[in-house]
Length: 323
Ligand code: NCD
Image 1 (tube, helix red, strand yellow):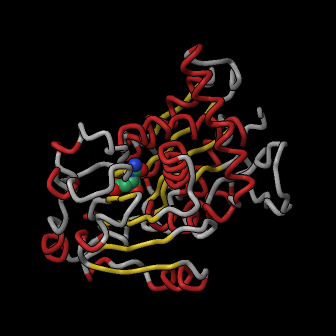
Image 2: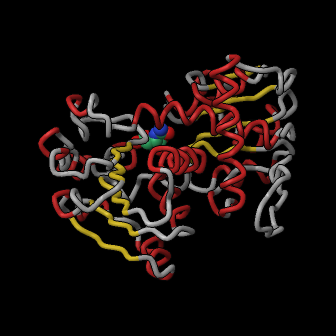
């Protein structure tokens, strides 16, 4: 659907998203973020209390994943089912669908919308979610479009920061790893530009933050640093947001090999961090955070995953007009 969200209001009491596609974090200003986070907390309370509800009974979600996924697909499916809805997962079997016969993305989504109320789409090409939305009358939720955006991940990341540290303003946030291809970094950075934060970008030269995004950051007036070394930011940061090098985006695998083991967060590194600092990671990890860090109370990545389900419950209920 092409529905645009335009009205700018200070505090939102009414669902701003009925029928909307969720394609980019640019759809979320602070009032909308606050509204969504309040609904996600209600979802959390409800799940802890009752396990689920009938809010989305007889609603059907298709999860159409052209790229691998564990957390995003399963948390969307869990979110829908906890709200009493049903799901058609096309998450492992895209190669067995008519996509393998050469069916186009527009035809695939126009097929699936005949049977469903909302489509969650992950696709390897930047802009694919927008194209799908142009052809589809039902809401499309972007679950990652190549190296472009991953808006629902950024929403759950920001929600996690708010829950863990009680605020977003005045925080120092360091993003570590593959900042070029890491779509979660792109979306989270854009959301953070609405807050009074300080940012640091830590990456090997080969995978620095894309220049256009860096220019957006600079234009926003936020204080920003770039470095190659975690040591430069570890005692400064309130949030260490670690990412994996996105092997699948490299055309030259020798470049991937060169940088794949650039960072590893270990207990020794954690010893230099603030007591209140949190470590986040969208996961999967492939060596960037040692398993021996998992029992550190500052390791927030498992809690971050749990938050993903509550955020996705709120998003599904919102776009389906049930909030
Ligand atoms: C991320 C993704 O798919 O962009 N994973 C996720 O959704 N939790 C990060 C990644 O794959 O490295």
